[in-house]
Image (cartoon, rainbow, N blue to C red; front, side, top):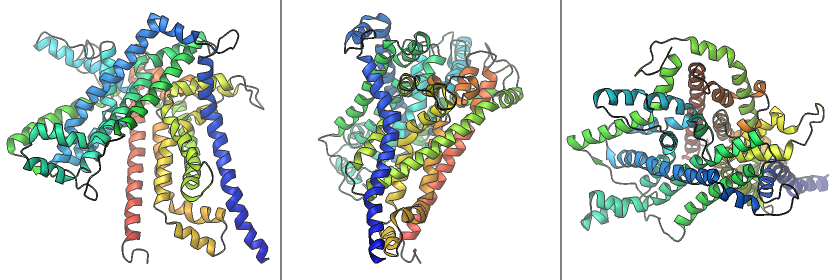
Length: 575
């Protein structure tokens, strides 16, 4: 008996982690690595002979349409970063540098655009800032001018900048708060102040956060599919990849060449962010940095700050206001406001789109569950075991960030369209479950970060105590580790659920019938016609409310976990 008791834990320790790692590798290999490699392979493959060739890329760059799409995508992504920076910089600097009431509310409102997919706000922005939108109607009436806010590529840049600027704001604000204030004081003693000090001292020290946010904005804009499609701007890479595969077919090599370029540029943007940090020292001499020294504003400065902040907030919240007006409006055409207001659009949305809502709750719920299971497994294997190659599990999961949704969808169609389901005989790529898997793979990095953070807050001593009392490794994880991680796990689930609920890029490629379509696809269908835009806007408002509540719940759970951790670590907190 003693011998058996000693052998059982040894067997669990040696075999269990490798078994779990093998399952994770099989899942990520089958639904992330293989589809992406297949896309890359087909891009370099001769369609007739299957031999390696560069002809497909030569054909791509020989085509005027594809060259224009490539340049347009780079231009739109670059300009979106510039404009998003112009929006985020004042908000980040004002709220971290000065003492004035409402700074927390301002930061909170500035994050609101992230809870609405950009393609939903694109239609509302047309009604507000289009050629015959509210703003241009007023400008034409009072000043005799119009501004092409939403014309062609301008519209895509405008919508994307307003939607994704919070990525820069979040990261830049965090960097500004961690700057060693002694650096600022030393610069002031040497006579530097104002714009010069910001340009030469403050902003360079905050560069890590800015580059992280800017690279993320570039990747998101470069890969986005829904916004250009809804604004009828098809001369960009992501829309061209979708149109080639959906119209010509999955055998068309150009769709794969475009997908390959999308992957390369996503990886390139992330590489540039790491390259920008390499060889540079941004560390502070103070623990925690101390943050910039805040100062009170004079009355004149306060008025100017509030004017700038309120103008920015009015601009970034305009898509939500436009969507809200559209959801209640009877007819909104060539008018500053809708002709009348009604609740009929919400009734239509609830009756005709109930299937979309049900599918979304099912798909996003299953995807979130898959993510926290795999995220917990990867986090535990990386932090609590010494198995060979454990860090590569983390790298493999996080690499999903560099894979655009449209590329993943194309890869699934190519790999799994010829694979039949055991009972039904239908292609695996047309099964609704493949949408769930795509959503899970796309959102796994977010859940993984939550799971890793939750596990890092649990002392290994608790597990050692349980094992010393005779519990097996599996029982320790199930009865001790997972219950202590529950707040982080729920936060990870909610994050995955909220973001998967409005995913369009991957799902638009994989929806085989309308009855299996999720909410994002339904929104896209509604917004295609003028008659459907009212119910579509109502459905969009419901989507925003769902995502907003889920995001709020996630933040509350994370905050509660931090408070509990702080209470437990305080003297006498564990008794």
